[in-house]
Length: 244
Image (cartoon, rainbow, N blue to C red; front, side, top):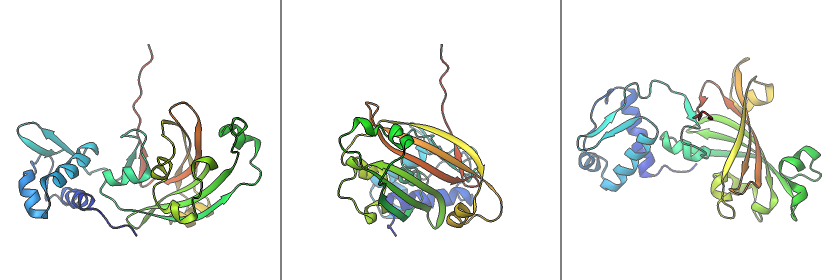
């Protein structure tokens, strides 16, 4: 399991202090200097941890006065996906002060991609028509959060093995390609026996089924992802702009 960085450790501790009301709503946090002394780190490290908590809407900075706990912070224990734009599972976890680990269940080539897969990934326009199937369980701390079933164009993951996919997929892809944007479709479904086993869900409960196609900035498909998220742990947020 990956060890937490010092920044991640400090983020987690501050969030725990807010949850147990050591730091209460609207309370000013100790200064960067005081926190650096307490955690025995540089002020830059403290600044990075505070920045992540500000991005996660847990803290707010009042220039010239200090950093404060936002009203109602940490009352909603659900993870809010989409608030920070297009982010990887690992990036969202870091904002919430969580550690991530991944169990890879399958990584194998698809020998004869269906017509639907060919259309989604625009295989007819590619010289390299290989497609790989990746199936993973993603954990925050020790809790299974999502089951991912991903179809990836082979040209972006050449020479990769199953063990490589225990880390962030975005990190792997960024070695060879720029990630631009994604189209996402979210649906509420009842959990199946297979998914309940992987995500440790008891009884009949609703979950989120999320289909995502991720593209390069010039609209070339990179991968097609069908993921299943625990509805008791996850929520999805988006910002909508009115068309005129």
